[in-house]
Image (cartoon, rainbow, N blue to C red; front, top):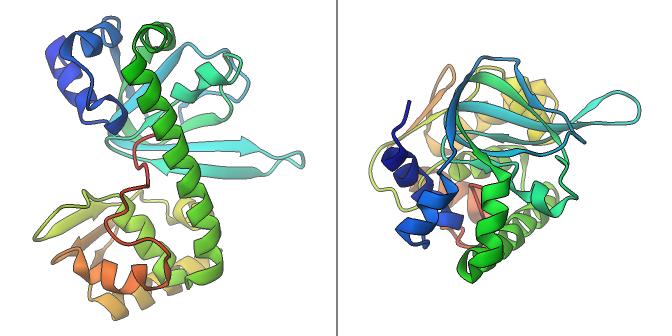
Length: 244
């Protein structure tokens, strides 16, 4: 279990909290607790009363909604350093989607009531939350653009870049969920299309694919190819990678 100070330090790595004073972070983390969640565990279901928001220390989480015909629409797949559930305070206190563990995960759960109280009293955090939501909206708009302008390998490359620290230099290792059908669904592809596109991305960029692990010599291997059909330049300063 993380100590209070380590929880504060971890939370500071989340962009929306990075500029907050130490005392503000400590108030938000006052009642934080760790969850060790196994694969297939449902954290909450769309429409449930929202009590907590979550930060992922390790593992993978699927955010989804069920359609009227009973199918599952994947909203996002999140991993280490991503936050989710926090926007529920703007959704009449209910979760707007469901969350399921897709690979065993270690997660920090923090009371939404403490976050809401801090937002009400801290203009800096309120502005950071609005900025984060605006960035996430722009990310969704760019993904619509990508489905029109990018080919399938480029869209996979763009998703992989989202999982990196965009100022990294030198070799990079990216760990993916073992279930590739989740990634295919997240990117709007059929599983067979995803497999073919990943092979083409490997040929075009020289990345190394070892099961659920992707290895790069440097980020340029992906950016030169994946960003060619995007209206934004890398690094994606306007894209929020840690909030949903």
